[in-house]
Image 1 (cartoon, rainbow, N blue to C red):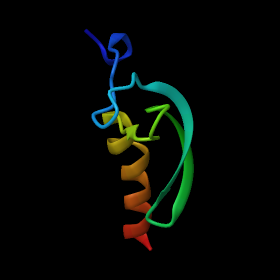
Image 2 (image 1 turned 180 degrees about the vertical axis):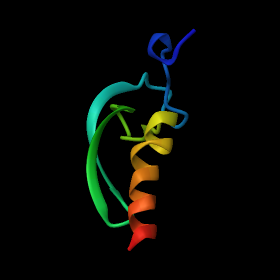
Image 3 (image 1 turned 90 degrees about the vertical axis):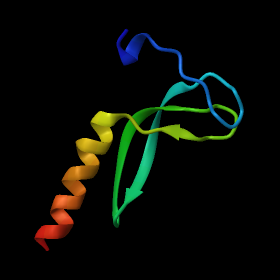
Image 4 (image 1 turned 135 degrees about the vertical axis):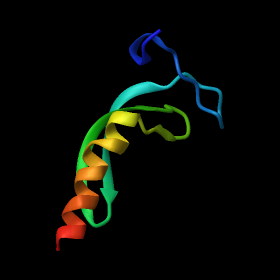
Length: 65
């Protein structure tokens, strides 16, 4: 089963997560990304592709400075 077919639930509230464009501030850089987010408490699920993709790019940019 791939990640798109899964129905994730919030560990805090038990609510089903919904896709929502979310702003991130990571190491002084701000970017937006559509992630699964709890409609009740706002907790987000950081998918592997975001952690290893965009966030890794920001880390590399900071190391280059």
